[in-house]
Amino acid sequence: MTSIKVSSHLDELAADMEKIATKAERVMLSTTREALKVGNMLAKDFARASSGRHGKLYPRSFSAELTFAGFGLIAGEYGPDAEMPQGGMSFEWGSRNQKPHLDLNRSADVIGGSFAREVGERIDGLFW
View 1 (cartoon, rainbow, N blue to C red):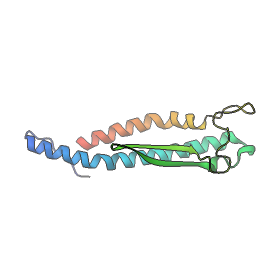
View 2 (tube, rainbow, N blue to C red):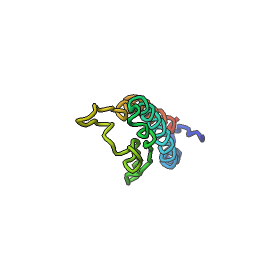
View 3 (cartoon, rainbow, N blue to C red):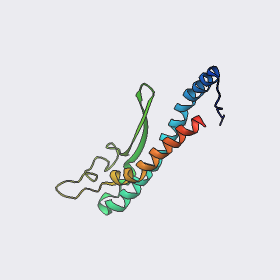
View 4 (cartoon, rainbow, N blue to C red):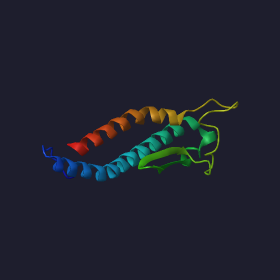
């Protein structure tokens, strides 16, 4: 990783800011990709524990996808894919036949704080 030095000259500051702008997208892509992978893995683990025998294929339906929201915005989502076996069933939010499992909520509770902290540390690292 190249370091960026703090200087008192505006031309050096402008050059540093240019370096930060070009590196930020790459750094945030890898941070978001890692958080998606971990979040999806946690959600799968929760789904394995909550789905029981009747939903043995449900955890296998989980996937993660990195998307781009335009204007340089990076986004992603993970969870059951409705196209996969049992991916479109009502495990997550429940139905009249079963209570909600909330596997995605549980994984988001775990990953949310660490993702926000990691993003902050990565941004800070770009400047120092």
